[in-house]
Amino acid sequence: MTSRSTAQTLDAKDPLAKYRVEFMIVDQSLCYLDGNSLGRMPSETVNVVDRYLRSEWATKLVSGWADWIDEAQSVGDLIGRASLGAAAGQMLCVDTTSVNFYQLCSAAVDARSDRKTVITDTANFPTDRYILEGICRERDLKLVVIDDDDGEEFISPEMLAAVLNDDVALVSLSVIQYRSGVLHDVAKLTQLARDAGALFVWDASHAVGVVPMQYDRDKVDLAVGCTYKYGNSGPGSPAWLYVSHRVQRELNVPIQGWFAQNDQFAMAQGFDRTPGMRGFQIASPSIIGMRCVTTAFEMIERAGLSAIAQKAAQGTELMLALHDSWLAPLGFSVVTPRDSTRRGGHISVRHPDAQKISEAMRIFGNVIGDFRQPDCIRLAISPLPTSYVEVFDGFERIRDVVATKKYLEVGEATSRVT
Ligand SMILES: Cc1ncc(COP(=O)(O)O)c(C=O)c1O
Image (cartoon, rainbow, N blue to C red; front, side, top):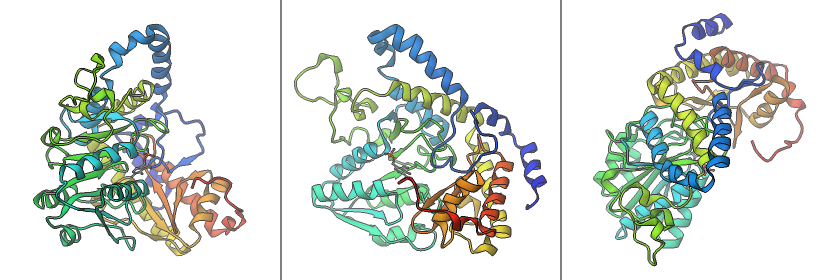
């Protein structure tokens, strides 16, 4: 595994290798191992957006809305079909993950108003924890935060069962933990919560586009996620939300915007929510943003999630082998599970000088991963744009930056983004 020819052979046999040329790769010597944070840009996105600006916005002006008005639903359906195992009519592509999370979690606790407990975990993504704190404060609910910050940050069915009872309105976890990369058992945890009469909101931001999910089969009711990581749709691109047919009638989101109004253009007094997914939409969607999402998720649909997941498993396996040979002797350890069925596209490695090393990787090695508090560096393979050789070269450069102690030359961080 530690010879470059192994990585070259993997690339030669890779059925997804042909997708790399569909991305605009400006610096061929960069090892970009951060597609789990912000995906690379498909070249076609430039043409699609250019065509949209010239032939639609500039040309059709306001008349364009006749074509654009329901695009949040059709683009949502594409995301659901390509990556979530979700039949049409249960998705929207809108707003941000944070807004969608607030909307669905609020709706869920309001639909279980006789229950007063909400469950999440300490390792969950900060926006989820903060929003849940706010929702619980507003409604005087008890927030139970399972402490799983040590080790691999995994909530097992037994751990969830231990805190579930008939007072729990809502459970919310991430499908893949943002820091450690551990993958939860969506089907089992969802079923446990359902059996206890609670609703479950999943945050799939780190899983969408890299791990196959089967929401309809697994009876998931509610989920949110972004499109800018393995979704390759661009910084701040519109997020998505999933509401199963089963619970659509039962739930009401707190922001009652005009897009959810039954006869929207009657502009009448009084809110009258329309049935179906439009009833979960707040406002005018970003059409430019959705064109980026469409371009990227059409590529994901063409490539197929099972091939994508296989490459993620193989690529993270390569990373672990390189870690064991090169990085472990330099004081690194692995946080992410060794079993490839329990992770997605990124691994997380730990080192006491992780922050300096992460910075030094960019400055001296032209390799990008990212630092996460307190001592982790995340390194990802995004299966469509990343080659195995890119992973190999990246790890070789990390080894060299640490082995030569070059990273000790790094000064104060210049950006507040890590
Ligand atoms: C798991 C997870 N949830 C939510 C968010 C927040 O997304 P946004 O800032 O688009 O609302 C992120 C951002 O990286 C994330 O990783």
